[in-house]
Image (cartoon, rainbow, N blue to C red; front, side):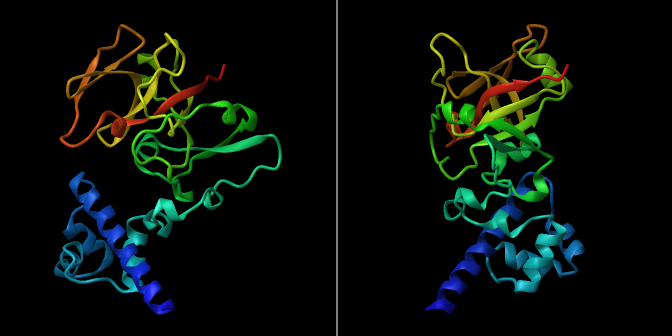
Length: 245
């Protein structure tokens, strides 16, 4: 029974690796030929793996993970990992550790692995606990709070609510368009082209309307993909902005 369970878990890891690789190929970040060259495998070997015609050995998986800079944690089902598995070290005082990551990581990674962390910042635990979640879709397994840093264009498009270089705390358990405060528009981190943008969000049919705060910048319109809903694009609500002076 133990061998059977381990075998099932190993096959699940391989399937999740296939999914991760196929996503990178679909996004133009990788090719089967390129992966074959990086790993030293024959292209047919890689193609058969991607098309579920064969598996990889433990050593083969390790090689693919290494060249693609993936961790085994990237392949685990978020539902099987509780919050204690977070790579953020536990805080012993009144503050909580929150991870600073790139926008693309905030948009796509339910759980943040160590290689994706740029910095760890502290927030008062009492402040974080007071924030109300508003989840839609499958978000329970996502690490709730992450931080990104606004770049020049993002910062100025939301001026004065943001500035270039500002740290932006995102509540990824709030991916609903429901106003957090009555009469006040939420600011969201929104998934766009594999990265994220910070804007006000409205819906017009099958399109998301992304509005800047600074009227010198244009309104952007993004058509939702078939089968996707608004909450699939909302990374989370911006609940705090830190601006260094």
